[in-house]
Amino acid sequence: MEDRDFEIRSRGKLGERYVCDYLKAHGCTIAATNYSCRYGEIDVIAENEVRIIFVEVKTRTSSSMVGGFESITGAKLRKFTRTVAEYLTKHRTDKQPRIDCAQVIVDRRTNALIKIDYIKNAVEQTGTYL
Image (cartoon, rainbow, N blue to C red; front, side):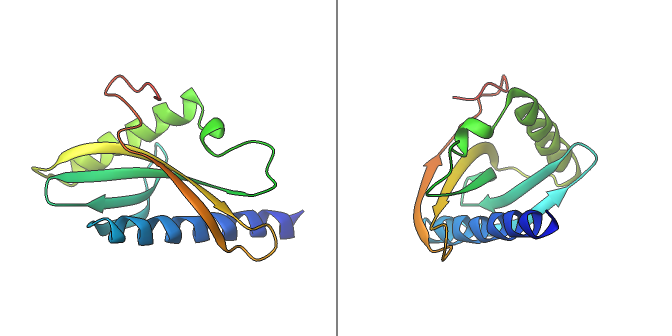
């Protein structure tokens, strides 16, 4: 079972790297990855000229039964928004915050990128997932 857990964590880290590349290609710089505090973890924190962007990344294989977006529960969103608030308290900025979600689909055997589904502003200020 430990090998399976390692494989899942490794695939998740790969998905985060794919999302970092995606964000860079769209004019962002990466401020941090895997920021964690007592509330939870933020996979990717990026910035552009006007925004600081907090991204939850879910990586799945092409044969997964449940998509990445479907695995983001209300409880997960509450933890995520608390983590964002904690980050913003410790790292003051004039930029507008935005919470995005990314679903990365990779080949089951090779981990090659198949596609990235990206939702900008996926969480309203109420903490509701769009």
